[in-house]
Image (tube, rainbow, N blue to C red):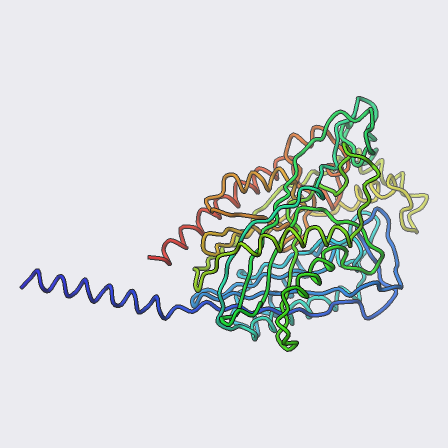
Length: 476
């Protein structure tokens, strides 16, 4: 009798587990909202000096995807912007959370890092365009809200593509005395130089690595209609006339056209995030300088590689979701009193105008940094989607860092999204600081401590381990 009872109970448990499995429904929704500036001229950042632009070459968008496994809802959002401060993104998350069931710590918002969009982040020679700064948070929230309203039963799959041609290290070690040293950059006797030129005899070697992989995540309705496709590529940017979404926008338009269902009321949404491109650009200075590239040709090449990977995707009707967010306090490389005093004396003769040279820019940055807090509170995120791991880091991350995160991640496939949930500047690995060069020069765009990179890398790897454990608990 006891044996029979045990068998009956085990059978009932199997039945309950199967029934729960059958009831599990995975849902996805996507949306895009136009964020092209309505008022011109507009301030554009991404360069050493401030630019005011009166022309629009192509539209800018916020693209959002919301995922729901029945227990956890997360939003992944991409904005055509150079970089966005944490405070602005926190406002957008609060607005979106008020009208959806998505907590603010389950929302990832990142910038594509196009250098041809309105400025909402003050750094180097550029200030904030206050009208656009007020306009953007509500539009970001609107995209999340629309994607949430568009949730429907879906299936999901992912694969990894590759384009080796358009990523190369832009930092090179030069012979001694060749690389420029910034008087106010906090470095001495720099050996690293950005963009040394093709086959420069004084360029010794590249200082970093490249990551040519293109993650491709596909979301389809149960009838096979494409809801969204999320990709990333570790190319810094290509370059575009202002205002423009650069090659990111062209790539997205190509995929949206290729994957369209014909139902204009339910368009496919494509997203191309910036991977780990802090030291990466499209010009390989070992190759022939005659190779021509522009945002159109790069977008076409990267889209071909992404679509090739797309064709190999195997889909899942349901996968578990897990997400973790952590705030990390990181020290700042602070200027000395002597450096600040020197910068103040240097700035006095032109204090009533904008800086006109890089030396003037960094003198002003020295003064600004000296008045700011000596630490930064940055948000790190880790996302689990089945056997896929995603990391969100609010910095310009070097390719080497992204490759190490992939190498030591507990997931079968992992990728990182840079400039997510804020903009706290470059995080060169410690050995890169020794070489100096632009990405190490002390400014609001590169001010975190020398050991910020290993600290951030260590934390996100721990977070990936924890979300994997959450996934395992959900599966059980």
